[in-house]
Image (tube, rainbow, N blue to C red; front, top):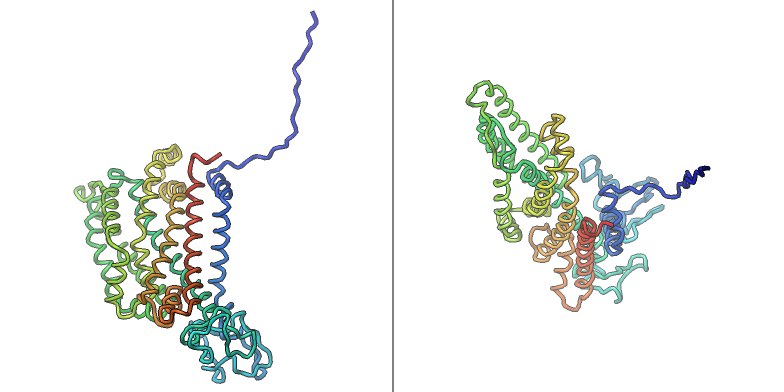
Amino acid sequence: MATTNTSVNTTPRETLTQVDQSYWAIVKRQFKKNKMAVWSLRIIMLIIIVGLLSDFLANDKPLYCKYKGNSYFPVFKQYAVDMKLSKWPLELNNVVWKDLNYDAVIFPPIPYAPEKTDYDNSDFKGPFGDQVVKSTRWRHWLGTDQLGRDLLSGLIHGTRIAMLVGVVSMSIASVIGIFLGSLAGYFGDEKMKISLARLILNLIGIPLAIFYAFSTRSFVLKDALADSFGSFCLSFLVSLFYFVLLMAIPNIIALGLKKIPFLAKKVTIPVDIIISRAIEVIMSIPTLLLILSVCAIVSKPSIMLIMVIIGFTGWTGIAKFIRAELLKVRNLEFIEAAQSLGYSEFRILLKHAIPNSLTPVLISIAFGVASAILAESGLSFLGIGTQADVITWGKLLSSAREYAPAWWLAIFPGIAIFITVTIFNFVGEGLTDAIDPRLKQ
């Protein structure tokens, strides 16, 4: 009987590429489906660029000029002067830049600084009204306020303040929230055990380290805060270094005391319940009331102070998100595999658990930035927490109260605040939908 081999061994052509099915790839693909969120993210990038380049977009100093045979880059020169790395030549010290006779000059698109006054166009000149200007090049396209300050220049520079408040405050909140939330979620109430010697010495060391690193340097930090944001950051890093150094001392001493059997005994720290109660306490404190109280005490309130307060009170949502995520992640197979390989708990937490739990945190950060910008605008509108020479969107909006017919002072800053807060909310909603497991298809 003849047997016919009917099996056909064919090799199909490779017409399909391998699809990356990683979690972040799925989130990215789902996020791109939300067109509103995608365009909102693009607008955010544009706003950030405007904020970073605000000195080059709106300034009364030229970008480049040739004066009396010498070439200058005044905007860059001002940065060096502010950092005390250089000084203005005597012939250019305290000059009215637009009145100089240049050999060649290139001004920014908006040739006005936000704090500079144009006395010829003071008393609320509207964007469509008559203005006293040499040419169209010097026109105030969005009008001026009572002092003759250019509104468009104020909006551009206010963009940097708004972004700075949102980013810095949420950076502080993120660091605190991720650190505390991850400890609570990963260790719970039973997994963190330290020696009795380390516990006692750290309980004594923490108040002393805070006192010597921050309290004794409070006047230095206060003066640095009044000087500039950069000076404060440098002084704060010095205090932080002192704190870490002082906290290292009791922990080193604890290593030697572990030889004593009683002090070497392990003590369980209920991290979850301690941090959870701390979250409840912080959430019960009204942020606005706290800012008002601190500004009433501090002699020189500043934007930086508002950022710090918003950051130190806004970490609770982030901590709750990452705690909930780590309660699930800590029982997954890759965590158990890392533990079986003998890795320390903190190494597993930092290198494996936290990186796989950050997605929900992005949602809280997006909404938090919008809330921080709105809070700062509200405080500036009330004239709280900002220095007189700092131009913000809220302060521009507040100037509309002085003269009701000056509609441009209310409309344009209000639109800027509305658009910025709305697009951050759209991005937050897009991230919420993107990480929803029911939509991953």
